[in-house]
Length: 308
Image (tube, rainbow, N blue to C red; front, side, top):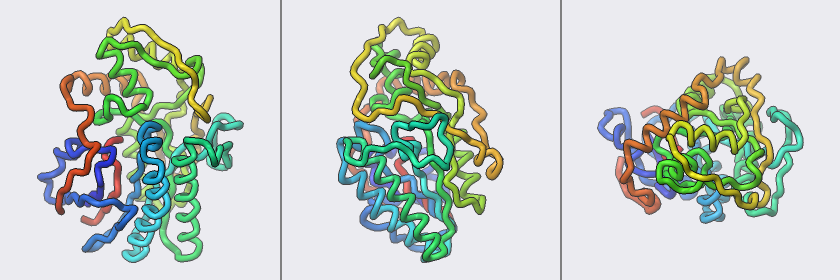
């Protein structure tokens, strides 16, 4: 069963699942309710705007899904004696003063800045998840997800991989914010899904970093996208946004040792697959999915933003 309000996702992303007898879609906002009928074996709480344009456009909704949404999902798991998986984020590390970042690092976060609506929502989500484990014995697992990319992203969702690809394929300038030397780690969606399933199937509490420890500068990523697309788009530089992290790379020792997980898809291969997906849909409506799309209805409940 999948709960989604399609505030940032698109029904088209799950169209291939709709005819599967084990799949059920419920149009719902988990910030309001996560009350669903039937037996639930596991709850995967992935609901949240995840790109800066989205959470800056919906600041209160982002805070709500990290707080009330997490509480509702936790209560559903507790009521069903189910495993609970929280999709947290590398943003809890803020603009890190420690590099690379392991799970013991507490972060360097501005709680009052514009990005705080996402950072603090996830930090609260982690706190309430651990409180429910200690006080109510809920079986929980927390993963901290680093930059993830792949097919079914929106062209202009504000994330660097999809933005570069859309710009390159459209013959537009590739926009880099900052000097391009800031770094990120890019994990292909298939690898991330394997990590989420491994965490669900484990008894690990976490937090556990899920990300690709291969570190890329934003400038190098732009050159990779230009090379794969064959684009001659120029690169334009713009000021770095407030509180934008300068370096980001995960330590994945816990994931390797406790989940047997590590990323397998090289960045160049993953970007090539993503470019192919975007090329196959040149006329896709990039605004699709930003309005509610009601649908009516499994042992697994996923409250998810379906645009990865």
